[in-house]
Length: 292
Picture 1 (cartoon, rainbow, N blue to C red):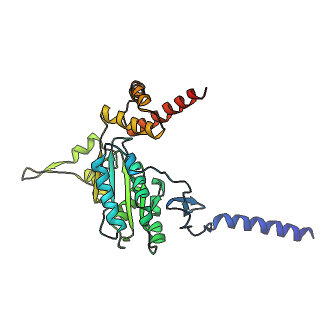
Picture 2 (tube, rainbow, N blue to C red):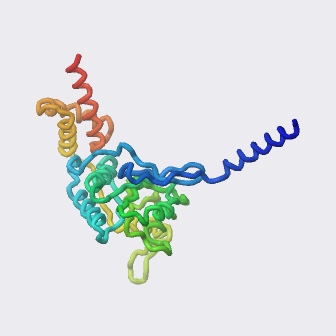
Picture 3 (cartoon, rainbow, N blue to C red):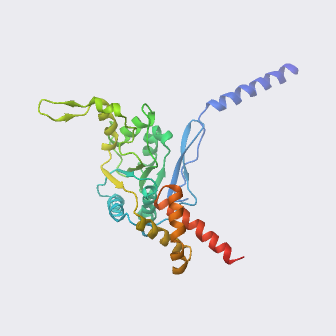
């Protein structure tokens, strides 16, 4: 009897170890649970998780990026209508609305079938699996990679490059990639890169292989949209907008200007993000003082 118990115990231990090696069975995506999803990894395999409470920012909430809004909205509208559209790279100053613009486009076009899938840089190697998962769906999917940048040799760099334009398989017509980055070329640039440039007999300057590699990924995005630091008046206008959404009066908004400028100075930035953070702080303190 002891031998049988010992055998069963050992068998259970072996089965437990085998279970850890087997791929985890993930449920099929719940397409009715929402219109935004995240790609998650567990047990070595990935799955789509619905975002229950997505951002509710709208295009009207984004100020002083009129040209950028027009470009992204037009491209996204073409996409949801089944017309040709481009993968998009949004680059430039931090906190100027790059990722917010993509989220606002989701709000604008979700009722027309647009869906958003957020993918971390570490999981970009799974892009082919994600595309295969949604290829037969009737919705239109934007794969969203936020704050994208790579160090040399990272695996995700090659995976994204192939997904954009380099695979033997044709790109799915219901998938686009929208990425944001503070770097125009997505890889760090060094002074030593300049040594790779050569002069041709015709006097033209030709980039070396290192530089070619660094610009080759960004060139695969069909649409580049640049964002720039805000001027002081632009920053104050964004502060005023958000304070209005928090039900502040015109007098309260005018009175907040000196504090808003000090807030930006302390953070070394007059970005839209800083304006939003100040408005939350100011409105919160104002509301607390009114209830004391």
